[in-house]
Image (cartoon, rainbow, N blue to C red; front, side):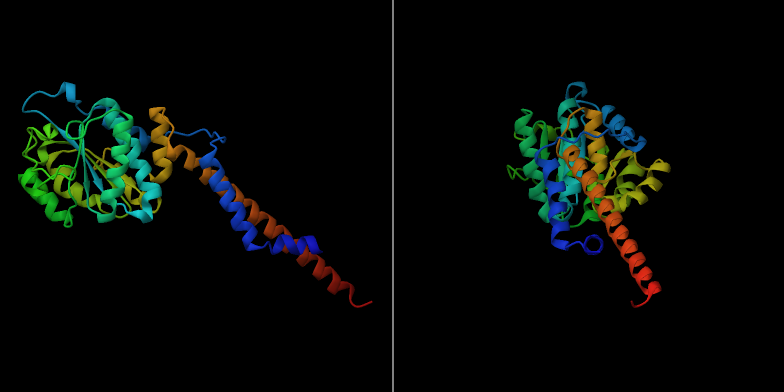
Length: 294
């Protein structure tokens, strides 16, 4: 009876301790290898990036730059930053120039620091291979402004504090005048902000959009995907892990996917144990009541 009661009423401190263990261990020691199924929306995103013009393929006057729209902050960093990291590595690997455009003030530093770390690791140069734009507080006005002038709307870069027209310090911005010179928009966000990019830039200017939402926002993305309004999608943290699998480059998302799996298994096991304890103890209590007092 004591053991059944224990199963029914497992101390929550033990449950939290077990949960912490099954989350932390796969992150630190990635011993759990699980097969990752590459879903169509991730494959579409990968193929869209593969089609982008590289630095070596661009001719004068036909230069393009990809834009990584950063909306995430500390609250969704665990999901959104791995999505950004996977795409940044792909851009660097292919030689696709890109800029990070932050609309979240905290996300400005979170994104910039991670891209700078990856750039050093992959021997990429700031101002030539990538650029960090300054924080933009008004998204719709920024999108509207870039339709007519990117340098005037975004002003200065974040690292050099140089005007975007200074192509000696920022050669990546040479010939980048309007949003028509964007090769792609990557929307990395915890909320429903992709519709603005679709309305202002994606549909009118035929600029492909890759959508990187958090898990709770994924369902709305399939409507845009089915309508052909976005080129692909990385659904939550698992989307980032699947993208890493396509790249054949395991990173944080792949390890975190292992943590998600083990934590889900633990929760299921605890639910089963709790129900076994409840129903077995209930059965014993009902049997004791049926027999009556001795």
